[in-house]
Length: 121
Image (tube, rainbow, N blue to C red):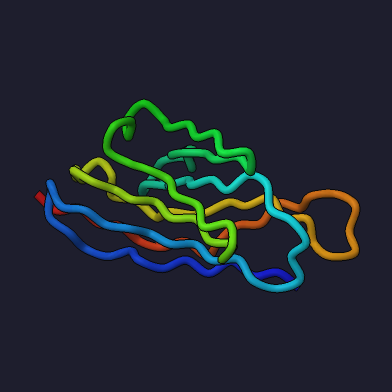
């Protein structure tokens, strides 16, 4: 089976940086999109940034210029580098990955377990 494990969340002060990681493991034949979402208390989950297998990246307006997605395709891992953090970035961050499981014919969407990011003033 396939598993996504996130790491790297924590408590930081405004202006500081954090790097989140999401590692996929298991019976993986191929990976396409590797995206990051976040959900703040009382709000809907929102897309933070997306990346495709062909190397295209896109970011939500609130994080443009501050957040960067990196992919290590050899390790089936996606990173979210978050710089110049502000209190409004406080949320649970989730990775979302499209994976072609060995033996399957279609990509399946998987979610990470989520990691808490808290930015204090």
